Image (cartoon, rainbow, N blue to C red; front, side):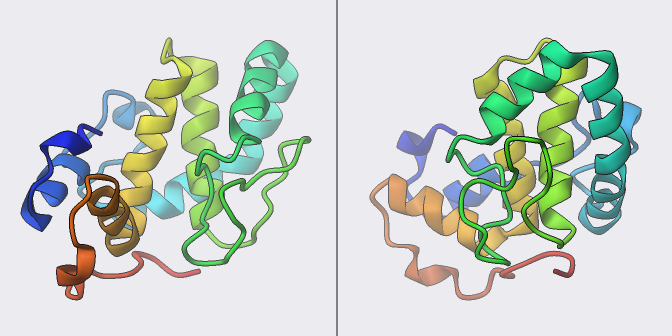
Length: 162
């Protein structure tokens, strides 16, 4: 995210909070504009997607594991305390909530079925994470930009249930 352009909480929201449907959204049946349904869809697809990619595209699965097992935030760290890594070296989700497998599905799908590079995959996961954890992610963006996040009390802490 271009955090250097953030000067106000409104800037942070405009820069970090996605709207519409991502280019892969139709293939997965997800939209930024329907976060609860998208959360359910993404979370439910993880076991099957994991098995499919692991079997049919082992190189993509290895790339996914390499990315997802780094402490870069592909996790539900704001709801369950799992930390910045939400998957083990075998690709098993380290948390039983919906947020974690949803974020893992985004990373895994983009690794296996698009030409996104690792930075683009991480950016996309962070977009979904911003939708699922608005207050935490916008606070993070403001902090990184050197701004005061204390005015964000009205943003929801979490979308969807744990």
